[in-house]
Amino acid sequence: MSEEFRNEIPSFGVGSDVANLALTKVGCKYSQEHRYEEGYYDCSSLVQRLYQEVGISFRRLPLPRENLW
Image (cartoon, rainbow, N blue to C red; front, side, top):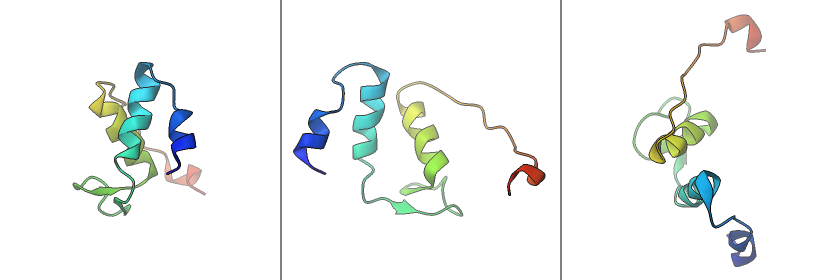
């Protein structure tokens, strides 16, 4: 991660907190199967867990199977 990129992250607000937390997850394992286990993430579980760490919870809504593809 370049220092120049890090300097582009706003230094205030929830977005900044989430972005900085996300940087701590670099190198964690990607797995849809294990996404809710410690140290594993997929895209949506990463976002959900980052926001949860700053006190914002999202409801998980099931998507009808016909909308998946």
